[in-house]
Picture 1 (cartoon, rainbow, N blue to C red):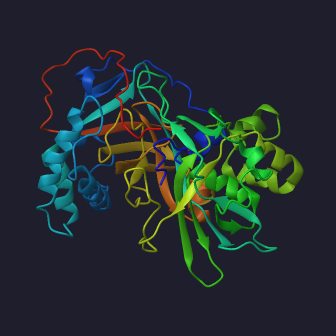
Picture 2 (cartoon, helix red, strand yellow; picture 1 turned 135 degrees about the vertical axis):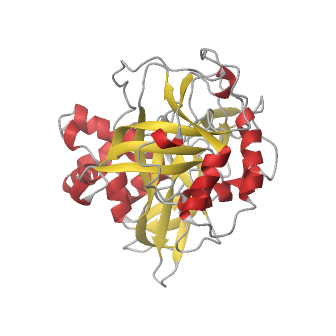
Length: 421
């Protein structure tokens, strides 16, 4: 869905709407490091499945199903990164074993599969013992394929004149590249949000759908996907298909800086409430985020399928996560241990479950940084919009990897991955 290899889409709602996570308190005992070529600027501490809080209580079958879907992609070809990543080849070996499992294994057999083929390691950025979690979801709104007095806000397909340029492999750690259009023989920056809203793409046949509320369009741009309920009862599934290359500005951060919403009360619901109560100011606020994304229609998805992630697969609510694509391989299992506001009215609950990396996002940077996909609709959006919390990450590494060459991690160039715009 955030096929986001660049995506804004994928960015976590509040990671995007407020700010990037800050450093957490240190004081954790020194960590033992695996070979630096595995992960850039990360440390890993060996642990055991028995030491993972909640491991034995979690039902790993949804994560196993997501992992097996990732295997279909992993087994289709070689790693496109340069140099190839050892993790990719090792995961493919585990995939061969996953194929021999029954279609619907028992909970105990699914757990035994992961325990047999993986070793857990706590993973963190250097100097930060905990990682950072946000949430995202797939909005669902009423709309139409044609414009009307009710549905007058357009969602655009990718323009033919959009020229995307990937960032250099030794550049800053970001998934997003640049975007241009041609004026004569020159390439100039692509239109920003304000220019597009003022009609820069009007009457070019790019309107893929029309919806009621400009704020819904804005949040769909952040999430990178959308379900549009059509008047005939059908549902149009839209997914990320490019961006305008303009700077992303978190409008939640602007509301906090201007003293309009207290930081401790910031959430997606708070941002929506401000825009609804102050329509003119809200419109101008949204235009401060110059970034804009384009959509494509996704077919052959069932009603229970999640949005399509950057790996090209439907996401699984509560089990699929977006990670830093330039550090991690899609299909990698992560066990997350956090206290998150997923309960009624935002009550804090334990979130201890096995997840699978299947997506990415421009705000998802670092070895212990993840955006959790919570599904579709308003309830999923409300939960996703509350999450900006620390958590502990355990990465499950295939036992086939060489664990013998331990040394301190060193900063390394991020791999060159074709298509990471």
